[in-house]
Each structure stands twice: as structure tokens, then as C-alpha cells.
Length: 256
Length: 275
Image 1 (cartoon, each protein chain N blue to C red):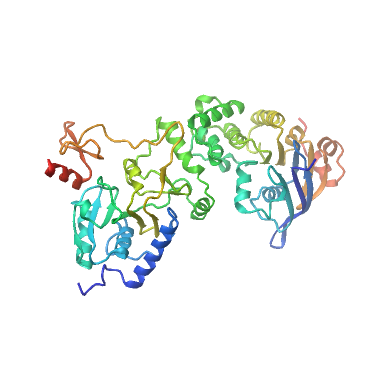
Image 2 (tube, rainbow over the protein chains, first blue to last red):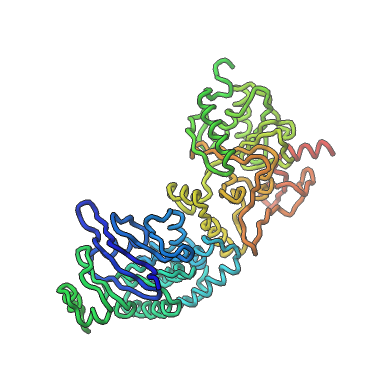
């Protein structure tokens, strides 16, 4: 079996400062990997490099494409990379306002990716949008409402629907539960876990919330100062942290 | 006449614009940037169209200028007089007699022929602009044929109004490649974009020229289950009785009186004098 995503020696500098350095890992099909670390540890830089939003200075990001097999996405042509970004990849932003079109109805938001790859049947697009609203637990009577009128949790669920409608194989999530209150977070996590299992998605989840990775991720990387300081199975890393920083991170979680 | 170079623009400027026009004709629907000049009229009055017309004009041209279908409104009269003054060309209001037609918001009802050139005044050449404000991004979208966004707009129309509500400047796909804004002509005129005449589009403020060579395939965007509909008011013309022309609704009093008349004044007059 080939890994879905294989990262080798990835590094990104902002002038003299390190964004992230020497990151290597393999992500296997159907696997969810968490990346945790404090603010400024390079998690988001790493995620943006992987998703093609930032150009890394060194290293390789090899993605197992449907038609050509493993290809380095950094040397791929731009049309091909943009095609990947709206078919096989999905990116869930921390702030749903970054990932949604706020002046376009919920149905239009979901249908955009379908139309981008050539869907030209209104009825079919609308049926897919209705189906996905149901799957992310939004009342389908709100299909023509704009996301502006939605609550934060609904907006985040709509963003997820909009991304998953094209049946991607790899989902990048940047703090998917950030800015939501705990009960809404719990519901969203439950939903995400169900969708990931049901669709057999691979995902890379960046978060500073250990509960999120505990629930979603099988594997975990801990970052500090732009470098990976510890990685392994989630339960193993969280229950038996080896690196001093991981120990601090785990012990910092408030036990209620 | 000796106070001006023929057709107002200097010869170097005309050469620059002709190069842009040739490039536009070579790549149908592609927006060619050009160094738009200051013209002796405000932006929005057809500075782009005037520059294109002036660059392709020859002394024995017969010029017709259309403003919203009419030959006798301010924009049409002033541009027609402009070319009379600076080029000394003959002018006409008859579509069939004209060799060069500059138009704002309409295509004449009488079918154009292979020996005619029609120049459109374009306010917004970029069909994706209202959906994507970044020029760098829209250029990339054109280059990579990423036109899903255009259908998103049509989807929103149907979701909100039950039908595609875009009724003018209706986006078209040219030869299955570039998506193009046909200038604010009513969608009723979209089928006429497939024509034996050369069609040139000039946007002065936005500094873009694009073109449709004769017999270019032009398809209005739509959905399989909501096909393009070149709608028309359900009335005959109150003056000439035409049932196949695009109509203006004219309010005649403040008690709800109204009449529908041909928007193409030349077509309407031609029919009435023949009857």
C-alpha cells in the first residue's frame, strides 16, 4: 500500500525565523492525524504548506493522485494543483467566514464545488445540497438562507458540507472547533467523527485542543518551535508523554 | 477637418488599438489589455467603443450609432456628430446601409451581414468581476477555464427567483473556451451574437478590447434543466405591430397607461414606412 500523503523534510522560513523545519511523516488512506502544539509552534504554517497555500522552502509533499499515482504536489503544474484543491482535497478553515461565501445561499455554497467540476443540472445540484444539509444536521428548509443568518456552529457545519460534497480523499482542518462553545463543539466533533468513519476520509487536523485529537485522531504529532518533538499513536502520546513539552501540554488540561 | 487627424486618434494610437483588436480576433472572447486614451467625453459615454470605431474607420465608411436601440438619443447623436466632425464620414440611421455600427445596449433587429462591423460600448468587460473582485484571480480563472463560479450566480438566481433572473449582460461561452460579458445587451439579443459580421468590444475605463470573429459559436450559459430563454414582453409593438422585436415599455400617463414599442427605432420606422 502506498501512503496517501508522504511528507519528507518539509521546511518553511519567514526570513531568519523558522516557520516549520524538517517535518517528515506518512499519512495512510483512512487515517486521521492530529497536529498539536501551542500558538506559534508552526502548526498552521505546516498545514498551509501541505495544502498548497504556502510554498515551502525545502522538502517534498507527495500525494497519491487518482490517475498518476504518487506526485510531488510542489512541482505539479498550477492547474493540476488547483484541480486537486477542489476535488480530492478539502480545507476546513478555523473561521467559517474564510471558507464560506457569505452572500451566497447555503445551497449555493454546497453546490459550488460540484459546479466547479462541471455539474450543470440544477435539480441534481440542489438534491446533493439538500442531502448534505441533512448529513450535517441543518434543517433543509434553510437551503436558500445565507450563511450570514446562521449561528457559528451551523456555519462551521455548512463549511464542512461544502467541502465534503465532492467526495474528497484528504481533508485539512485548521482548528475546526475553534471559537465554538463546548456543547456545540461536542456535537461538531461527533458529526465529524461519524463522517470521517463513514466516508473513509483521511484527514490532518491542526488544533490546540487535546480533546479534539483524542476523539478524532489515530496518530498525533506534537510541535514546538517549528519542529516535531514527539509523534505516535494518540492514546500513547497523551497517556504516556515522553517529551517535556508534551508532558507540560497534557498536564495543562483542566480536569473538571 | 485639418484640425484633427482622421478620426481624432493619432496614427500610433490607432496602430496600438488595431494590434489589440487583431489579438482579440485571434483569441475570440479573450480580453486584451490596451492603453486606453483620454477621449473628449466622460467615461461611461462609450470611450472604449469610440476608440475602437476610430481605429477601424476608413473615409468611405457609413457610420450608424445606436443608444439603447435608438438613433436619436443623446449618446447616439453626440457620437454620430463626433465622427462627422473629426472623420468627415457619412452617417446613417439605416442598419442595412451602415458599414460600421457603434452600439450601446442593443444589437439591431435587422440581421447584420459579412461586410459590416459592429462595435459595442462595454462598461464592465469582466463577467466574473462581481463574483471575484481580484483581477489577478479572475485572469487565472480565465486562463484555467475555471468557470464554476459563473454557474453559481445562475444557481442563486434560480434558487431565489425560480428562474435565471439575469436579463442583460447575460454571460456567454465563446467557442467552448472563454466566458465573455456581451456588454449590457438584453438577453433577447444573445442569439444574435452568432453573426456573419465582425463584432468588436471596447471598454475604455477598464482598458480592455475583445472580439468575436464572424460565425463564432456563442453559447449562453444555462443549466440542463433550466435552459437559456431569450425572453420578450408578450405584446406586439404599439406603433408597427412587430411581434419579433425587443420592446421598450413606455409609461404614457400617471394613471397606469403604458405602451410597448420597438426599442430599435430604425426597425420600427422601416416597418411603418413600408406598410
